[in-house]
Image 1 (cartoon, rainbow, N blue to C red):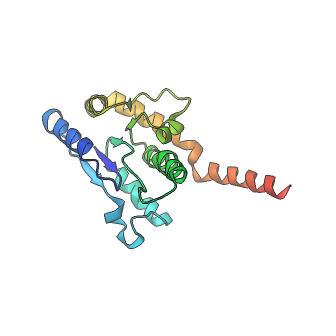
Image 2: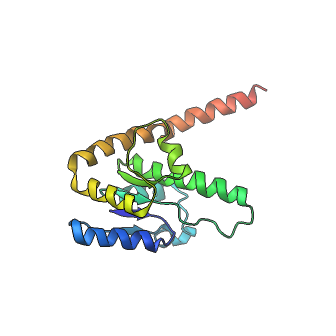
Length: 177
């Protein structure tokens, strides 16, 4: 069980770690890109780094994702709201889903954008609900398999091939004007 974030969400980390010590033979990992990619200021900017993130995520059986402060140094609340609340949160979920990693995610906009129109169930409104989902996913093999399938399907619209097609259509539209 793990999370992939630069943010230090001690409340969530402590709760998940405590749950796993009591109820499951599992380990909690915090993959911090700021540490892993210090040469790029914690940013994943190359295909090789993206592949490394996917390998790291592939080592987990479930991840827990919650928006926990982002780019607080930005003065523009609109930029912070779009970049953090929508883009970065959604991007983390798509990365997890791209490797078939079931996720417990918070009922927050960027995550909800990714699962919109689906029946993805592991959405939490608070830590207690998140812990319920972690326990269920860790202990229920068939639920884990079902969520893996849903994750892979939800990641498909964000594949490089699909995104390239979308960008080509946008470019064609711009050039036709």
